[in-house]
Amino acid sequence: MIKRLAALFGSWLLLATLSSLLAGCGHFSFKSKHTALAQTGNWEGRLNLKTLTKPPEQFSANFTLQGTAALGELTIYTPIGTTLAVASWNADGAVLEEGSQKQKFVSMEALTKHVTGASLPLTSLMSWLNSDGENIPGWEIRSENQPGGRRLFAKRVNPMPQLQLTLIIDPP
Image (cartoon, rainbow, N blue to C red; front, top):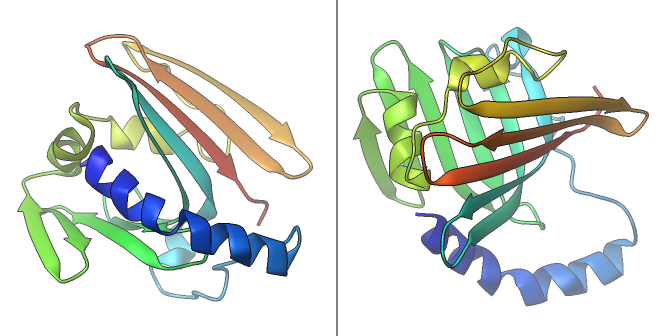
């Protein structure tokens, strides 16, 4: 899945470079979404996910995340704002939409295992978005609050494969 997203992302690289030159130092903003789900939690920024396999796989993109660990939606965008994928979840399970394709999963953890090769602890990771959250077994997490937003560095050391997740969360 990371390879598939990376291939989609790579095809936009040239266009994104040209767009960056035209747009200067600005970045694409998604703050115009004012949904009921966004009222329970709303974050946007950039993410980088690296799977420490041989060879390593890496994926970077813009994102919006709305909702809570129990009910939410994560949208992944190209640098110019085109939607690559949407993952949504609730008590009944999770759905991954890529273009016109939809896949259903029993949980968000099962969806993240399908995408990254390992289950990600969504509830625990979401507790770190606004402030330092709980310790997560098998993970090393640190965060920084900066004037330009919050940075979250998470590294899964156990189980294998190791993952590195970096989120740069824009200020509200």
